Image 1 (tube, rainbow, N blue to C red):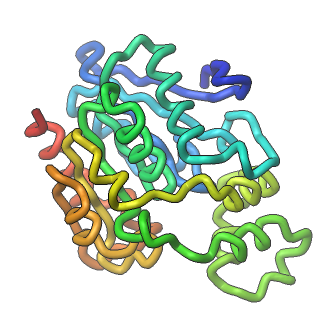
Image 2: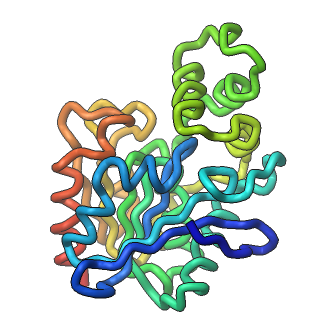
Length: 254
């Protein structure tokens, strides 16, 4: 992956051009404890979008993947991470593009659409629905599990699952703990109501991390929602129905 300086933080990214040449760009923003490879390449998203004629841009969020690791919670606000994404568009000389984020990446994508609306043509908010506003409520427990020296001391199964996923992705656990403790991810319905770009909201039917889709759809003008039957937070990301819904959405957005 290539890197660039985003306000003093080294951010890694990768660009994939469509087989027939550089198509319309779409920026993909991954979720917590993941990276571009895990979230978008492995589940087939990059190949799928290239086959749809898209130029695909992956970013590794600060503290994740090949990007610089930071250990203070106050540098992980969603606005700061959205600014990393906007600066990547600046670097690539992309005036405006479609954006898709999963889970934490959906929060970052929402902040990008709110604070940099002229750069976002449309936005897909996936793996995060009503809990984008309500909150997930397990941040402190997950951060403690990530920072623990001994996994055997973690008794709560949900934080332990986050810890094991982070280890599986080869993540820096201390950097992720700092990211999880950030208080800069809060977002309100009023803020979401200012989004002017077309929005698609996607989440699994049994995704307790995301929450229900319809309440978030109701907060945003020009938003549509898709619920993936039987899918949870982990297995929704590669769902064929998710891919098909995104393809239709992108083909029909203004």
